Amino acid sequence: MELLWSSTVLSKTETKSLIETRINNITPPYILNLNGDLGAGKTFISRCIVQKYGFNDLPSSSFSKMSVLESTINKILHVDYFNIQENESFFFDNIYDNIDNNTILLQEWNKTFIDIDILQLNLEIINFTFEQRKINLFRLGKFNFP
Image (cartoon, rainbow, N blue to C red; front, side, top):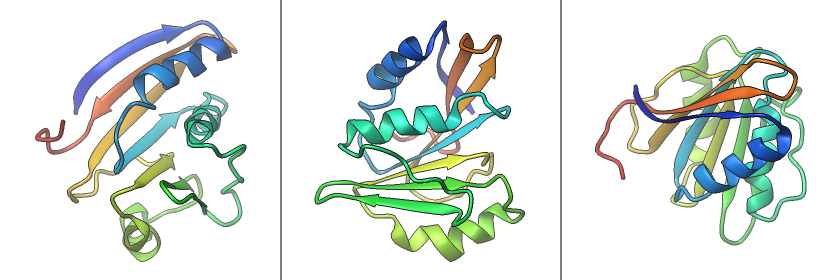
């Protein structure tokens, strides 16, 4: 893993601003793994990302495991791995065929690097208090991506 940046935020407003300036300018396709304790803000950050692409909300993936949001320009896949045991097989059985050049794949609770030619990032969220958190962004795997 290569640390790209690290930042401490003090509120949801600062978290949203950080995501708008540091994540929402990444060009698809990419995979963003969001990892942190329960309540760390993984789904909040996912919602900040999908709002940038004109989607009002992010449906819960708790029951279906995967939500798909599509427009004429972008496709966002949101997967919650919390209750999925075999991450890699779930990826290839359910997700891989849905990825194209306009896809953003948001994966909560996944720490597995999949060896495919798509930029893969890991967003690590560490809570200090209810709203104060440290957010680290890492590039996973191959480092030949922009």
